[in-house]
Amino acid sequence: MMDFSERLGKAVQRGRSRAADVRGQAAAEAQSEEELRRLHTNYRLDLSEHIEECLARLPDHFPGFEFQRIADDSGWGAAAQRDDIQITGGHRENYFSRVELVIRPPGQYMVLDLAGKATVRNKEIFRRNHFQQLAEVDLHSFVQLIDNWTLEFAECYAAEP
Image (cartoon, rainbow, N blue to C red; front, side):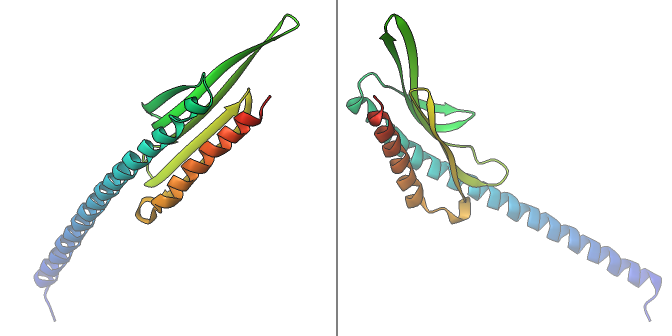
């Protein structure tokens, strides 16, 4: 049978071993979080460039649209907008159209989040989000959504009188 001193020594050793495991796990989580942030940055760069390419083409088809890059607290991407005025029988109507697509910052859930919103002549057409866990991102699906949301906006805008 072990005496108290031996049991105490073993308890101290188990405690130190447990503390080392916790430190190792915390270091692995920090490294994993750093890797996820790096992934997010790479995806963000690719996708925000694609967003800019898509939305920058709208003014070619719809003169009067203004293109702008977005890089702020809401995310990284671009927008295209236009203000129209219609005067009928001395009555003035103002119409606002805008499409905005951004990749949001990573946040606590470590997801890649594409946010899109569109308004055509003062009517909201859509307000959407699509997200995937960073470790499971299908970049092609995000590119397809950016294309589809841009095309949907263009079609809705073109259909308005």
